[in-house]
Image (cartoon, rainbow, N blue to C red):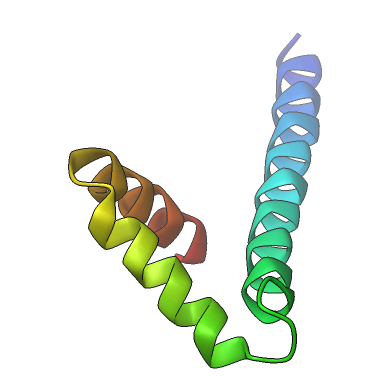
Length: 69
């Protein structure tokens, strides 16, 4: 029974890691391509969206930083 539990835990961990990686990839693609050919503008837009969001922006920033670590 322990083998089944560890196998399920390994599969779920792999799926969660894959989803986290895809989310980070989509965020970086959005930074690079949301404003055309201006990646600095995309980064500025991202930071300003966190700053303008108030408490929700702070929580979103914390979630975003947790994906990087």
